[in-house]
Amino acid sequence: MSAPIRKVAVAGATGNTGPTVIEILHTSGFEITALTRSADKTKSLLGPEIKVVEVDYLSHDSLVPALRGHDAVVVCGVGILPEQINLIDAAIAAGVSRFIPADFASDLTIPLHRELNINKDKVITEEYLQKHESSISRTSIRTGPLLDFCLSRGVLIHMKERSITLFDSGDKRFSTTTMPTASVAIVAVLKTGDKSKNRAFKVQDIVTTQNRLLELGKEVTLGAEWTVKPASTAEMAKKASEALKADPNNRMAAMMQKAVGVFGQEYTSDFGEADNAELGIRMMDEVQLKELLKKFA
Ligand SMILES: NC(=O)c1ccc[n+]([C@@H]2O[C@H](COP(=O)([O-])OP(=O)(O)OC[C@H]3O[C@@H](n4cnc5c(N)ncnc54)[C@H](OP(=O)(O)O)[C@@H]3O)[C@@H](O)[C@H]2O)c1
Image 1 (cartoon, rainbow, N blue to C red):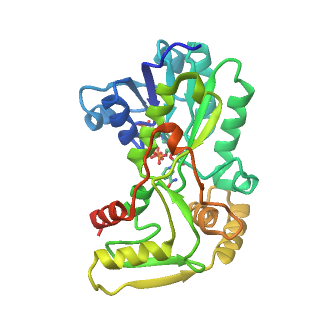
Image 2: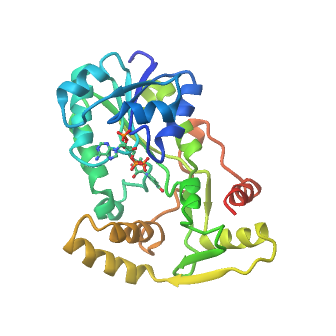
């Protein structure tokens, strides 16, 4: 049996998900080190209780001492290769026992999801970790679209503008998870020990549809006028694949592919039972969903 996980290094602490992950790991009792490319920026963002270490993700010699003494590495961002592979190599050299790669994605056990360009780095990273599982264990957290992150950007539904880009019929069911719940899943995984080794967990706050979000959005905004913009995932898939062929880093094409990966007919986006029970995570009900929508209105 492996020793309990106490000291956790979090890479990518300053991005979209890092601050929430760090806050929840910290309040759950883990000793955190935030890895960053700029200590000044990160210290002012995270406050004095979090230890911050500046690293160069392209240098093994910078990463190994920063990771020594840690039990786990959690990656938020830094998904761009080769940084994450360097982190894995350094974690192995430093004797870290568990690696949680940048994920928060759809169900990547499904081949169609794995084939999407937007998931390429995640698949490569997972395969690399699999290859090294005798040296370091891994756990991935799958969440579907991050609900609060998406709502803050008007994706899924734009509460402030009272508008929605409705993909196809709007009836596609999808699992979605807030950043706090995704972070609680990481805490649960790190506390579970060997039972969470070398596998992925699917976690969700709720399974819903865009039509249901629109109905709830209308209830929240009490009779306001809403604009519905229809979009076809088949057309978006075609446009995205042409654009990505010309430029694999085309950001607009990546955004389109993300929508196709959730709402495209052939993509499974409803996790079904998910693994909430195993992680002790309760789902959200529609009253709570409405409260969340209200916050972004
Ligand atoms: N399902 C969803 O809806 C959803 C939404 C958002 C994110 N995600 C996923 O969540 C995970 C975390 O993403 P995120 O949005 O939190 O990441 P992010 O904001 O793009 O990046 C996080 C941090 O990584 C570091 N970083 C960025 N680019 C780097 C580079 N080239 N080299 C080294 N470090 C770099 C930066 O920290 P420093 O400057 O401090 O080094 C940055 O603040 C990813 O797997 C992402 O795909 C999913």
